[in-house]
Image (cartoon, rainbow, N blue to C red):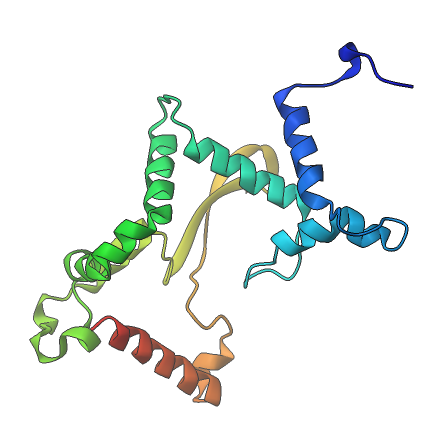
Amino acid sequence: MALGNNDLCQSQFCIKAANHLINSIDQSVDPCDNFYQFTCGKWLKNNRTSEDEDKWKFPGIILDENIIDLLSTNETVKLQSVMNARILYSSCINETNIEKEGIDPILSLINTQFGGWPILQGSSWKSSTFNLTNLLLKLHQYNYNFSFSISSEVDEKNSSATTIFIGQGSLGLSQRQYYAKETNITIAYRQFMYSVAKALT
């Protein structure tokens, strides 16, 4: 039985859902031969897991797409946090500008905000001007919680209240045993740090 015009959903959400289905179906495959490949073949081809994930979850994909839509729109907003997020997103996807500026912004940040990096500056680095307290404060402003972490979460004893939690910091090597003695892992990690620093010179 054919559907009447009133039964055809043409809303933005229905069109988007239909587009998802069309982009998932591999019409080159006969559904009678391989129904799974027919229904999911194109989706599997176009959606590969990233290096930090071992599986895809469709709700996560929808969430990512919605976030991109929010960050890409030109609609006027009053929230400074949203404006900052849009500026950050725009700068991250501007590969032309990233290639043009190279590592200069990173080096400038290290030198002006963090007091320089001895391994990069060599003998020109002055330990007398280095202030560990200021460095830790600056790192915390950039959300690097090496010494300790601070977060606001629901109070465990009163779910209607929010409280401040202070916890342990997070270093590059997560397990304490790596800092107790030298191992192949710590040697490789130190070499990795050196390689990163060398790449910035």
